[in-house]
Image (tube, rainbow, N blue to C red):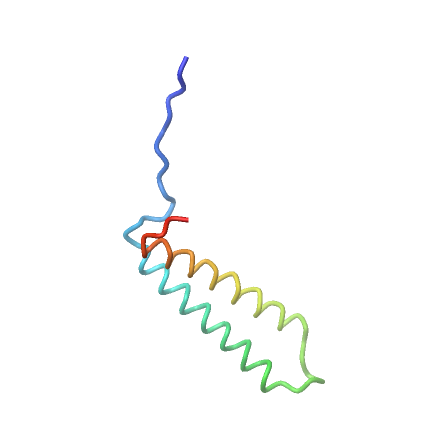
Length: 78
């Protein structure tokens, strides 16, 4: 008894990898820049740990996804 296997299809169309990669990397770099500006311009007394964590986590996740799609776009299937 053999099971009918179905081919795997990517949830994101491979033709849209360039748009997704460029968009996510751009957004991630903007969030990283916002984090750096926040860190350098805000005094130690006025810094908020929640703001720092949210900016850092968002920038990290978005840049990670952007680099993942950049690798897929280049043909490195991870």
